[in-house]
Length: 357
Image (cartoon, rainbow, N blue to C red):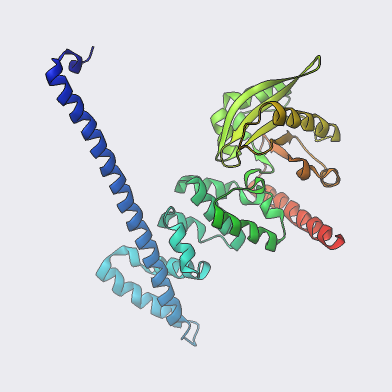
């Protein structure tokens, strides 16, 4: 029994009312503080964009190579003296960079409602516009912290998405659709490869060991899968006639509004895996899919795959994605080289397919 329960009824009622009122007011205060913080952040970011615009306009007037450096150095000294370290030479160069990579002020205004200036500082060094736009929009949609954004960039998330493997124009169209509708597509959700080094698996292990390690590290696994995934079941029983089949892992994706069936394979992908996953997806669509949900999608995680087989089977039309997983990560340079080779190969194949059609 708490202290309020011992009070007479005529005293307890005002106490309860006061607590309820205080909680309501506290919520209003928190909401107001958050709104003020968002407004201040957005205002600062737009101010930095405008400063970058002014500086860039002045720099374009110079004919000598050192003109811009002299102007920036002089302006930085004066602004630092008047307004503090936030307007140093390096800070001004970042503001110019902000204007250069985001010449459309409307895009900056939208992003700055969610992204802080610290987020933009992580995005500005990225050289490729599609890569930068991908991280900015995913950060906005999934509300990544600065630390999470830094980790996603470090793990080369963009290079591991199907979006990066599309010809530039198609990728731009998909990102524009995301910017306008806030709706994620499977190509933005699924990755290849998945980095599962956190499982701690070494040398020889069995499929049940892989599944057990994932379940023991389910929080880390969900982070690697990406935002929106919820774990539903392991070894989901699927009964057909007199036979029982068992799906390794079952998830639900909140934004896609689809069930996601995951099969784990210790060896490389084989065409026979396709028939198994198609069976599972049809059963899920018939018995587990709820009104308002899209058709279930399949993810086959395997130790390796052959691209020509994947291409000929046209797995995307069946809603099935095949991806490798890595339990022991190569060096960053080796992984970067492998991913860029895969990106170039996929783009050439997609371009060739368009020409043949």
